[in-house]
Image (cartoon, rainbow, N blue to C red; front, side, top):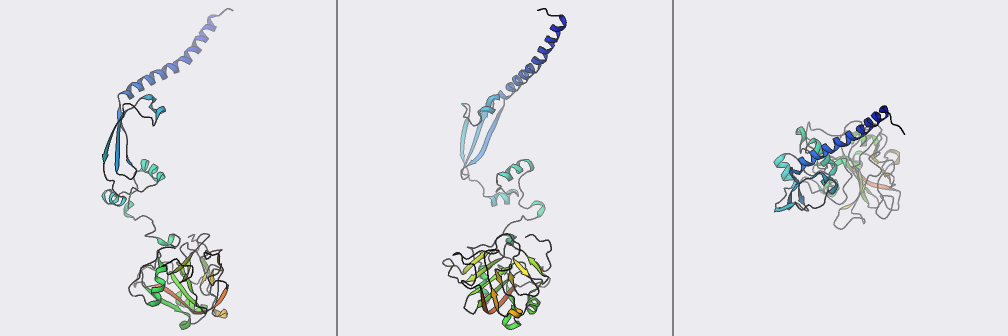
Length: 336
């Protein structure tokens, strides 16, 4: 076969084009390896287990270390010192930052800085500041409050982690005193904030519910994940507990049906006290919006779906003149 000058030239160009990138890579790798071989760094510094041991490791990095990550090196020198890790509270007080982040927060913190305890002077969202953004607690009970009468003292423990936990209470509606009709009911309770309902059946069952959003009488469904029902001194109560609480289920929606033609109505069916022409009737059907009782019973009144009440009362919080009272208006777009 004869090779022309044109063919040989094309072949040489093709070979050169293939070799030039390879030679360039070799030069770059050789230079990088030379630089890395002379570089020392502290590879890791962390707290082991509970934070009592702090480990520092000095090592020399080589180009191939990337492929041997985690393998011990002969040149590693490990020194161990004993120290006490500061608590998150101590660190926050000292630096203004909190160190209780989960792994995702730590990744963001690497790029954007540590999470501040009070960014721009604003306190962070949490259960202590906004307890009613969380479901009712079932195994904790509120402490007594000075000024509570006998009945208030019975209800106080159920108000743990609510806006009324440590606030003085006042009796705003008493059906035997004010009348068993919805008009009177709303004239006493509307725009007063969150409240606790307490009723006693003719059979002696003492029960009720907590309405975090209160009533305004506009015919809307007021939602709250913090709403709950309760039975005082129930056979279902744990040893030493004042009773049992039943949480809102299925999200916050329809926690309270605020209907001007009706009395208190916890969801459309969990605890409904219509008042008016129904007199002292109360109905209960659990499961759709509030938890069932532990044994599966689906009524606050045990085997009875409806009962006659002996009394019905509503307690609101006491607010100073000019103090802000939450939830005193309509919530057309509320999702909580």
